[in-house]
Amino acid sequence: MLHSSRRVEQIPPYVFAEMNRKKEQMIKAGVDVIDLGIGDPDLPTPRPIVDKLIEEMQDPANLKYPSFIGCAEFRSAVADFYRRTYNVELDPDTEVLALIGSKEGIAHLIPALVDPGDIVLVPDPSYPVYRMATEIAGGLPYSMPLTADNGFVPRFEDIPGDAAQRAKLMFLNYPGNPTSATVDLDCFERAVSYARAHGIAIAHDSAYGMVTFGGYKAPSILQARGAKEIAIEFGSLSKTYNMTGWRIGYAVGNKKLIKSLSVIKSNMDSGPFTPIQKAAAFALRGDTSDIVARNRIYRERMDVVIEGLAAIGVKVDPPRGSFFVWAPVPAGYTSAAFVTRVMEQTGVMLTPGPAFGPAGEGYFRISVSVPSDRLSEAMNRIRLKLKIDGGQP
Image (cartoon, rainbow, N blue to C red; front, side):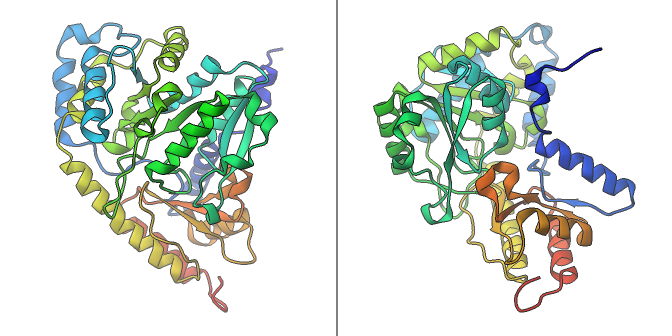
């Protein structure tokens, strides 16, 4: 009889795969589902980027095996992007690595740095891949609680000395998923100082770095003093240019960390499709008008959600980044109970906070990456179908 490995058998279902299963069941039952759970941009990839991909696909030389580390054109474009955006200098040959989406790079970084039994410091709540990829690699996730009273930033001083001593890697993510929290450069300065003192590598997930509002500009961790000594940053074109299905991202930063990651990758994959890399390079070197217009749309949608939540007694401050709203559940509900009631009574799918870690209990996440009319419809359903009694649904 065939068996899965014990490692696989111990992995719970990926939360978003499970949500898709429930969504399909509801649709089959005739429910008009509005999915505000998964963050996949509804806005199209800008047409000039698509045209560039088509152009590059006409060159037979681009259809061969791609470079393991990424083509020189893409790596140079990433370095140029960092110079223009953050005033950070990168060597395209040693400090930039092409990825098949940042998720792949994050998952491969862990076995590149972590041996079985080593600790990885993981924000709680956070993107589930940090924790699950650590467990798959045999590492031990150690939660760094993110709480509202501290701006959803880890309290590094609360990490016990023995955990810090055994830690090989720390994950950070700003603008945050799911919390939509944002930070200024001083936060990264403190993180880098702590990590250098304890010999811990930092992986900063900057997938939403260009999704910002209200004049806020998200910093790169590589702008912090000494960051290049211990930090690697992951970037993605998925949210910046609405290219989720293209699977193209990059890792930048410390040369040794980049080299270790490239060793794992060269033994596991062949790099991103070259025409996609060249279209991505074209995107990174283009103007930011599409990004500005897209962020304006997301901010308008945020306002719709915040007003809709206020109508059922849920108060949320406008986020400065990401396309998520992280909201407290109404009094008297667990996260699961509230999300289930909304789904059953309105057909609107939300994500319960604990999907991102135990500290997510008491919260739920809404994605505004759906067309504006559907988002308005979803909020109206929640407002009209959930009876309000004393300010609570």
